[in-house]
Image 1: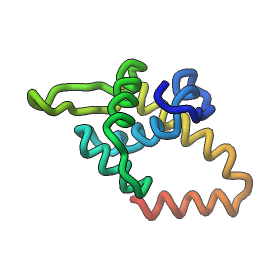
Image 2: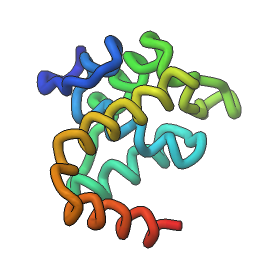
Image 3: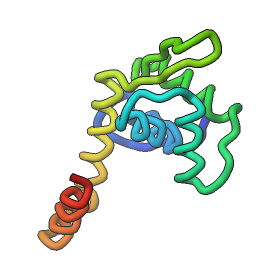
Length: 119
């Protein structure tokens, strides 16, 4: 694994993902992207530069795990897309997080408002 921090979820494969890898999956849940676009999203989130030596090995790990599919856009550019298993890993993570966060009606309402504001 390229990262040390792990996240526990219901899904066996998703349980072994690092926070960085989980963030890549969430970014790819929006739409398929090439590596530099993923890098820009991560840099915006972390508010710091993400170096290629961190990004691409993690993308390769996600491809090997069957969570991301890699295809060639042109001879120099690869596109990355979430697989069905990758989408399930994202959903499993959200489910786990919600099971820990939504402990009463007030918190459930907070989550509902967040979702409504995104639609």
